[in-house]
Image (cartoon, rainbow, N blue to C red; front, side, top):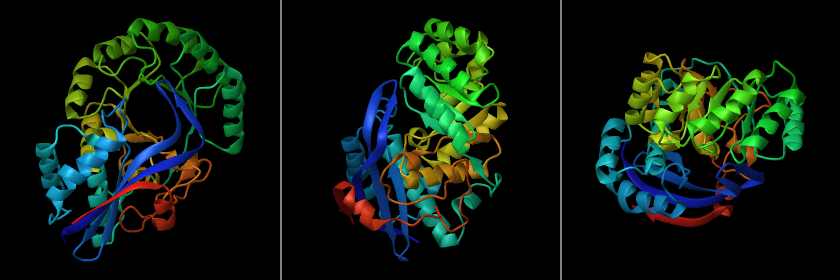
Length: 369
């Protein structure tokens, strides 16, 4: 099987409600869909959801990376040669992880469809029969976040993730208001998205909410300062998760050496896709670190890929692949319920692309042969 041509779709995924985190407010999510065609008539799909704050890529730069560098070099390539493909991409371009993730995911979709197997069977087989689904809350006023958290608990969600990081004093109010609203035993995870900057600022917040029984605290300091993250971890009883500070195997080595985190948040857009994501899981497991598969708030394509990885790996204990639940229009559908999802055992990613919806939200389209 050989890749013979490709199409790149630049799309805008509309949010049902604005999504607010520490560094941005999103009305819609720019994303790039990659469609590979092969000489055997098999079509595979991948996705890049770049973030200039996290991956260093923009919507336009990602389209350029795919159409001018990566995809032309892979025409004629066998998608099963995934290690060779990653080596080729790394020689062509430094960084650009979400663009490389789009290629990687599309190749896994092709491999699964050719083999007649779901992607999770290419990653080790089904370990988790089903995956719990969290409710992710944007940064809002404390009373509104408390209301939404109680509503999510009553609707059947299994946990709440709170976005914070805009104002330390208000963040304490937000966390306490949510805990009061949902009671003492319901899981709460807190994500500052680097909003507290320094270890001292992060610790000033954490010490005021240590009695709120937080499952874990995610990225409480700036991404590049792994020493600060290690300091926070050493001075709190709340488990610490690294997200924006972890992209590749290089950062993983530093996290382990400095004992900087209890948990890692693997995002396919940060680590170049499923192949590298699997490597991170295995290294973390060796070091006694548990994993989560996170999301840049992606469509059902990249979300499906992440769910396959989460399904296959014992060390992955949670996920936040809830982008499809946040959009008013998507390019496919995944079988979410309010509290769980079972990844389908259909070949490849196991999803059907809604071509009409894809075309409707496409603002740029490029064909490569």
